[in-house]
Image (cartoon, rainbow, N blue to C red; front, side):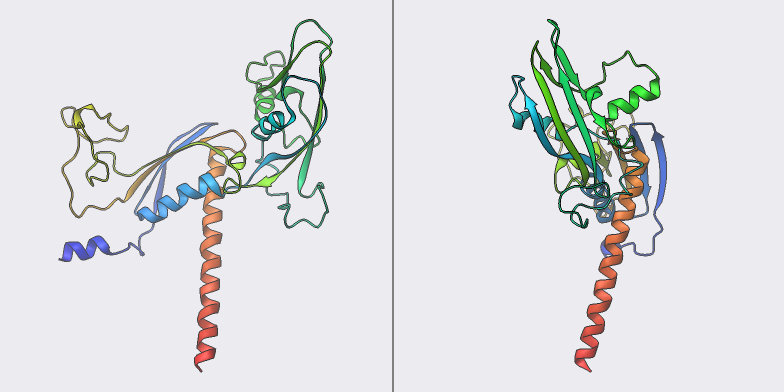
Length: 284
């Protein structure tokens, strides 16, 4: 019974610890210990859906004689990742801005104007996008500038192909948003989350344990397929693998996610405190 009570108790007094296992320009791997599954899962959801970035949200196609329809092109433009590290916190949310349409306080203007005059088909890529703010450019342009290789366009994202005489011209606005509204604003390309690498809690049923691939964090011996069942076991270590699309650095995704979750909890605490105060006045 005492073991069962310990299993149900929330570790409110625990001080979570974080250890970074790997950090690159695209991926951050880390492990969180001494916390609850609900807290770790909240972080996972915040990283994916509530960290703000910039994405193209409004497209005015002024000329399109390509073989692709306007709606198809607009959709492709919206999914182009834009660098957001240095500008996303400086822009207002468009719902909070006082402008009637788009302005510098809530958006960034981009333009594209390409015409094919040769017999060889012209590839229209993210290299042809011109931004009014150099802090908000296609991610592939940032990589090219970092490598100082102006002739290498293999990483540029293809938008469409034009034949001789075809013309594509458009004006675009990028604005601030988050993945819960549309996935184009999500900063994560992939989000790995693991808390029971050896399946000791049996939250997953292996049809054939010997055929199931072992986790990178497994502590089993070579001949073992899964750990012994822990009836009162509780997850306390959580491995994260956050891969960025390039709009934000992976470490900034984590830091921004922590800030978002902290603000949500602070707002909840303030709201609850006010409700308790109102209730006390009503009773008195």
